[in-house]
Amino acid sequence: MSFRCGHGALAGDPGVVALGRVCPVCMLLDETHRSRAELLRKVAPPCRSALARETRIGAEYEWRCSRGHDRYPATVREVLTGPGCAKCRANAASPGAAHEAGVAFMKPGLRVGTSVTEQRLRMLLGERVRLHHRVNAVHIARTFFGRQEVWPDILVPALRIAVEYDDPGRSRRAHRGLKEASDREKDDALREVGWEVIRIRAGGLESSGPHSIVCDSLTEAVVDEVVARMRRIRGDAAVDTISLGHPAASWGRTPHRSAVLSRQHERGDGKQHGGDARSRDGDQRA
Image (tube, rainbow, N blue to C red; front, side, top):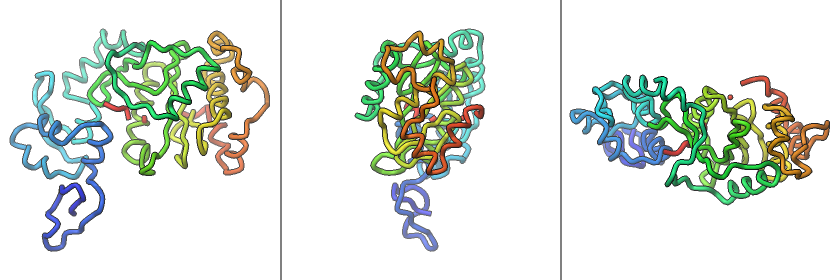
């Protein structure tokens, strides 16, 4: 196959099927905010020519560890999503790393694009509960996109809850496919260190975990449901300690049901909100 990005077989070769999209490797590179040139610098020199044309994220190559450890075999996806070499994985599981796992902190110079909707979510949620504005990352007990930390949209350290906003964007492909898989992996990494993730899944995205809130768009009713989920996850007493007295901050204590939940129930999505007893990245952007 030949892809729009120019990778794979040559478009003019006999029997080659041309696809009008970029290849899976280029898609994953875009999602992880990296380039093929960066990937080529990581691979062992004899493999560079083959990797320059590679289209399969499951293809295995020999890589050089950026920390100077031994060369190691891994797939393209594994290198981009961060398991690292055996020594890096051992370091991630060391006592020192375990001591920091789950700790929220401020990462200076972190540059993560924030949409207008995410800013509005922070504003509306900040009217209901006290948000900590001096943290933007959480240490984890594994490597994710090559780092032992993740950067959720909103952190509530007092509850150990992260809030993420997902929508498909203009392309209608964001937070689907490979990106949804990375979102799930990110959520798993946070759960391993005692955090829970509430994901707002808007614009036609389906539920991706036990605390997903499926909606058409961000509304005050959706933010009310976020607070209600916090109460279900950590309990009223814990949420009361950071409540700011907004009427919606006590939402979830009564049988009241918001318009967003009614609409979701009519669409048959209500069971997702009753499934909090079950378990759920969603990216990270490196």
